Picture 1: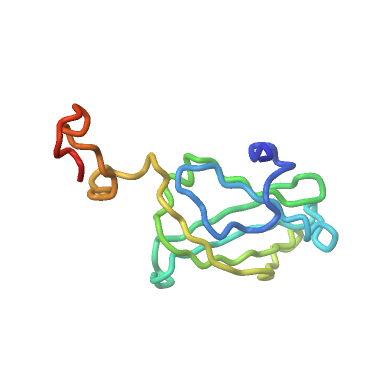
Picture 2: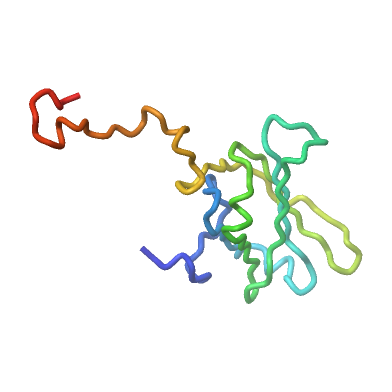
Length: 143
């Protein structure tokens, strides 16, 4: 497996699933020819499904220049605050000279809770621990 902390190895498409509390990175390598990152800005807006236009469940991300490409990088401390659920996203290119914007792509992703974000009560009945009898080798410890 390639080192995903190295921006040379990050995926070149938007993720279908993100993990709250993990570093989130991808690169758009297909835009630099038509939209040079010195003259344009790539940004994303994601809204959680089932919320209306006035909802506060919105994620805004702005990509940075990475050579001729656009690098999207969101730190784990930021993704940890994202609400778990399904999101619809749109990608925009904004012309820096006059702030005119175009929608260039859209899709969906699922945000799932990372292991550190899960509360033990949310896992009730999902993790089976051996009974004390089984640990001591006494009969009847089988579940």
